[in-house]
Each structure stands twice: as C-alpha cells, then as structure tokens.
Image (cartoon, rainbow, N blue to C red; front, top):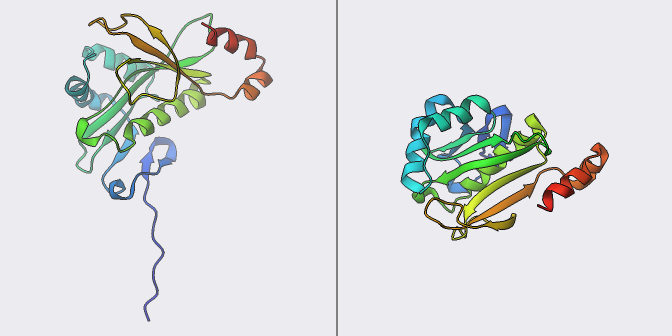
Length: 193
C-alpha cells in the first residue's frame, strides 16, 4: 500500500524571505518581489493601461532610487508585470515618520485575486521595519469602491479631472507601542487633521 505524501504548501516568495499565501490556483504562477529600475518601463505600462493618473518616468525613477525597499511588483509565471505598488516616505519635519502609497494598480485580468492587498501589505511592512513609519496615507477616487479599510476624509477636486479624492490613512504602529515611545500625542494631533 502506497503512503500518501503530505501536501506541500506553496507561497509567493518576497524579498527579505517573507511569504504571502495565495489562492491555490495561483500558487504556481504568481510572484511578488521588490521592484527594480529594470522594471520601471513595465510598471509605467501597467499604470498607463489601468489608471487615469499617469507619471513621467523620472517620477518612477525617483521612487526606485530614493526608497528602493518600498516598491513591489506582481508578475505572472512568464515574468510579465501585472501589478505594482509605488510607495515612498513623506519628508515632513513637523510630523511623525509616515509613508505614502503613490500608486497601486493591478491589470484588470488579474484583479480580485488579492494582489493589490498583498502588494500594499508588503510595502507597509517595509515602511515600519526600515523607516519606523507610524502610518501610511493614500489618495483614491471617491468612485473606487475597491479601496476600503482606511479612515478617510474627502479632498475636493483632488484629481486633474475635478473628481474628489478620499484621503485615507492606515495606522501601522499600535497606540500601545506609540505610548511606550512617547509619541501618542503627536500621532493623535496628526490624526485630528
């Protein structure tokens, strides 16, 4: 009688040896990894195909060179980039360290697979681990129903076409840990704005 072998778990391998679980049917075909300068043309292409907010190449390069730990790509089994997150740290001297998601996109045929969440999760983890970020901010169109889970305010006519934006924020460090660091008052003051 032949013994059954235990099922092996497959993961997406991330830089710095982090893993993210994927749905069973995607485990062999998706990879999330830190973006490189060589990826920027494909990232820009993904942006141009899927988003109305587009950037010049120098803006992508600025992110890749200034905060290389914070931008990630999702690629299929052929190495084609099908999604990305472009992130940075804000440099405001009167504020606690915090990150910002500049752009997040997944090609339409790869949506509803949890890739955007996984890309964002990896970027925010690195914001905390590398830069000590207390929170991350993100602007999304009011009509973007997929972007949920943040506390938000409305910024009127934020986009070039006049559509309002939701100014969203996700707390990355628990208030208990902030209190231990003596920065709760600063964070509460920032959150009130």
